[in-house]
Image (cartoon, rainbow, N blue to C red; front, side):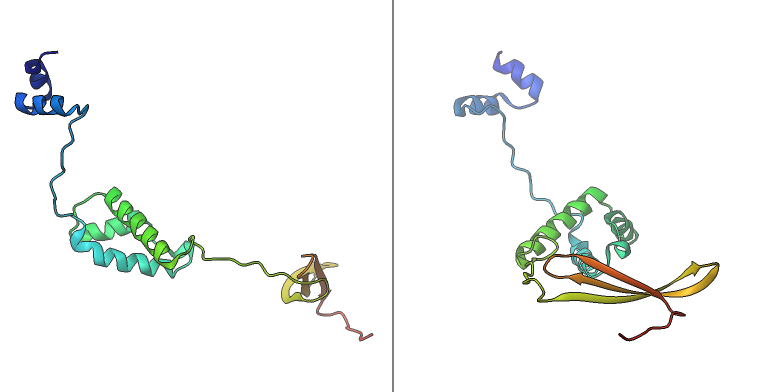
Length: 162
């Protein structure tokens, strides 16, 4: 294809096309000009919001869309996708700094048989024989085998020491 036709189709000058042909470049590489980010003035505030979110339970956390809406109220005119990309980058950097995989590190505990168990106690209400009674449950979990035992008695029952 003649250089003139390539120039017409691409909108590039003939000299630029000749330069690319001499270099053997298949696709022209343009340097993107440095532009100030629309998110720049809001980056510190967004970082603070993201940090606050890490301290909340999953159900209490605000979504990126909600944070974007709040930024729009403050005057931000950029896209939600840009806020989401910022949040992803912020989280990745935070995880890299903390050297964690998101939920922290986990080291399993190892116990010998009979060495330890976990115990918990709970209460609830139930119907026994048409009567509403308070139920008390002892929960025991053996640490070595992970076997569970749940012992149930209702509060009106007499406890006899053996």
